[in-house]
Length: 130
Image: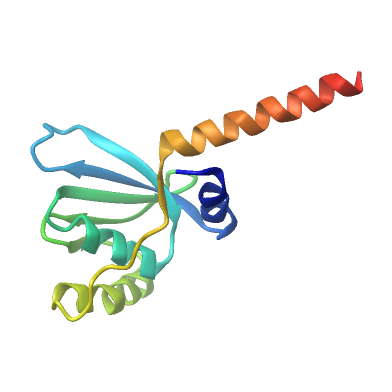
């Protein structure tokens, strides 16, 4: 993913993680970062509904937000207001009335690489000032 898209993900605000356990990968998972909104969570669940055994969404501080299981079922969401809002967006996907939108999502590695590059640029600028 290019830097511009990574910056757009960061600039949207409420950055968090999606830990996706794909079917048949023996408990292995891939971590992604995206903007946590009810719309994006619903889109994420719908996009990976038939590929993921389990999806766990956490905020940037690794605090649990929600979880879904195979088939795109929202199985655990302690914030009932958020749960209702996610379901409002998820149900049209589940009913086949709507296809999931393209979700702005990046791998954790892509974001960490961007942050590392930024740190290097800052260090170089600081060294030039010495």
